[in-house]
Length: 121
Length: 129
Image (cartoon, rainbow over the protein chains, first blue to last red):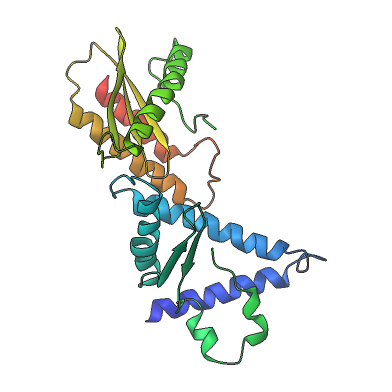
C-alpha cells in the first residue's frame, strides 16, 4: 500500500536524522533512544484520546489491555497482538510476531547493524 | 495530581467560589469512579450525571477513559437545561479536548490556551445563560 511505504520511509529518516544530529555522548548514554521513546509516547497519547473517545468506559485493567491488544493494535497496525502474558501483578508482555513497522527491514540483511536503534513504544 | 487544565466561569465575579466548588466535586467524581470499579454499578457511559445538588447550583461530571475529568456547575434556577443537553455539552468538551491533545505543539499537563477551545466554551456558555 502506497501510504504505508511513505510512513516507513519517514520513520526510518526520523530515527537516522535524530542519530545524525545527536550531540557528543548522546548516542552512548541513551539520550537518542529516550527522545524517540518520548516522541512515540506523545503520538500514542493523541491516538489514544481519539480512539477511546467513543468507546464504553473501561471496567478494569483487563478491559484496558483487551482494548490495546485488539482494537488499538488493529487500528494502527491492521492486526491484533499475537500473545499477551501477565504475572497478574501489573506486568504485561505483549508480543507481535510480525510487527508491521519492521517487516520490510527484517526481510533483508541490509540494515542488520542499525536494527537495534529502531524503537517502538 | 488534580489541577485544572482549563477553568472558565460566567459571570466572572465570585469566580473563586466556582473554582472551590469544582475542586470539592473532584472527590465525588473519584467516589463514583471507584464504585464502578467494584462493579456495584455497571456504568458503561463516560457521563456521570448529577454529582451533588446544592441549594443554588447543580454540579455535573464526566470522566474520559484517559482519566480526564470534566465538571460543570449550573445555576439551579436554570430548569430549562435538560439531561441530554448537558450530555451533549460534555461530548463537545470531550471532542475539543481530543483535538487539543492531537495538537503536537500542546504539551500534556499544560493549561489549555487554544482559541478554538475557548470559542467552543464561549458559545456553549452563551447558549445556556
